[in-house]
Length: 238
Image 1 (cartoon, rainbow, N blue to C red):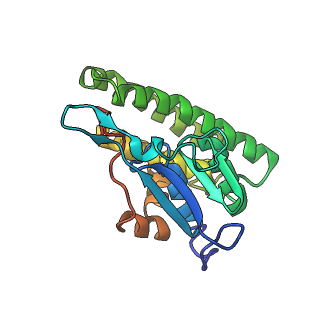
Image 2 (spheres, one colour; image 1 turned 120 degrees about the vertical axis):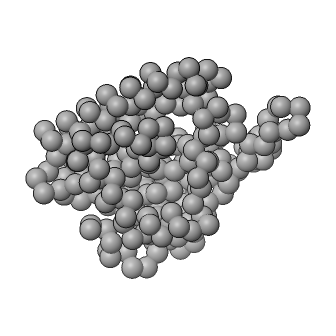
């Protein structure tokens, strides 16, 4: 399995210290970044912020908002990344920065174009998923959501068959890129909605299993660092 032994020692930040990732204590937009950090053996600190439901039913997000403008972040938001003197917000910018550092952004110009295409497609799918997950009408929307996701899995499986590299389980080329980790995370959450979503889709099943069983990802999943909650406390589907 590619990536299994290429980083025996942890990658550190630019200044030799840990990279810092700041995000809510959920999977959400932060989990693909965490998976990338784990897969590429970065030495990092997972700075967690909490959304707590109060007795009156309202939600307390002060753990983040009390600190939001004191961290020196450009465009303060979650997630954020601190690597030495570099501070980045915006999920895609963080993913692409770390992927470039770790060699997981695609090997050629054409590969990187496909990686970015798959990143954009994932955003379309995630937007529909999160809109339903955070809706009070989630249970009424679930059936249509699952069918939408199923059709997206059909399209992604078709992409693998038409454009995937022969002999490779990955979405782009023969080596993993960060979009493999990103789609693994989405599929992992989708399987909670409906365990049959990968039935008959051997390409996606092979991709999912390759990431799921990767040595560092498996170790992470079995550690106390692993976060199981998918969406924030304000969501209906958590």
